Image (tube, rainbow, N blue to C red; front, side):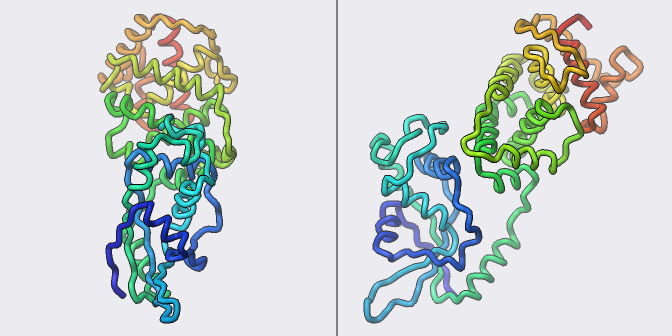
Length: 350
């Protein structure tokens, strides 16, 4: 078997698809599931934004000596091919919930010409198998998968679930990734591995279920329960955004010990609960439901807590908070202590 690089523009790819020079072979299709609307739209947005796509793999078939017509079958990239061709043919109206507003909610013929050009001229990275048997194709996938870096839990969730909740989390994290990096909540590597999506999902889980010790199965269940299209995230999304906007504005906390992900979990929940009263959190701390927080006092209190934590003086007045922030930070009891302490810091003098 020989493998050749055979890049094509989307315009050429779609024309070849229409001429049946590129065909689908169902035996290579790894899933019968059709991508939901948001996933299909996200692929087109990726193309129009100029971001790269995963590689396509085609298998060159033996040319029929009578028709003299060359043809290639799609080995990997069938769903992507269907989405691209549907958009090319004006059969796919994009979701209105896209970051690229110029194309949101539109068909191909309705998007600005500059994006039509980007779409048509996008170069697809294609590997072409020549003289490959079915056994060769299977062996190729086995070998490729042997070198694939194992997915972590959030990456697996975002690969498995494709409907409203997953995309809401995705776009929320995209909106605040700069803050999360500048504040040193997550490193660039952690953001790439989607650990920020776990933080947001855990906060969402606490709002719905109370503060618990959450593990991967808990978050998988959350995604599964909300795996509907379309998904209406209000009012939780608005309250989450409000909390993260506040944290983003509090630049004095950037890089401090209060910007670890487990601290942000408790602090964001405290901000939401103090302002809006979350029923599942009321038993841990009664909410005053105040829209106005004394910011000067709150920041002074939070700085005091950060200094106390850095001192590791468990014998002082903040000993319980320090102990709850030192080990087993994902455990329910420790989370509740941090949450309660932050609620107090936001509402009175410590």
